[in-house]
Length: 145
Image 1 (cartoon, rainbow, N blue to C red):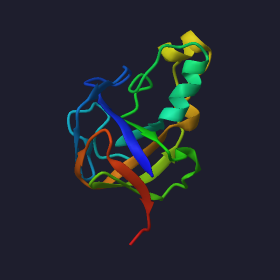
Image 2 (image 1 turned 90 degrees about the vertical axis):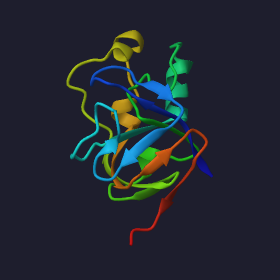
Image 3 (image 1 turned 45 degrees about the vertical axis):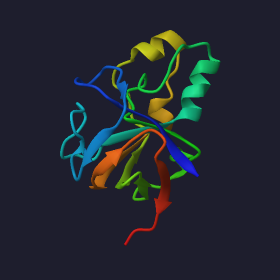
């Protein structure tokens, strides 16, 4: 079964996120205390640990949060989830709203490696049901009501 590897936050947009022990997620808002939270379609970002490992294979010293993702996952192919899919992540429920993103400016990772996985392999979601998420929490795709 898929699981949460790390949960990460940042106070400002455009910077790497810091792994924390847990995050509180609020309905239609996102992660409390994270710069990307708010009433929009990209409240929470997710990136697979497998994607981060691809960048390590290119020689980069990167870990969870370095791609500005809120949740690093393992065991689920995030990019194959259609927009509108629902995920139970710990005690929360999220709905996938976007796959990948367009980078308007090149980040530090791009300049170090010549590539970045977040624009191609990261996904974004809005929060349907809030709660707490911690590393080790299980996650799974669920049916829409």
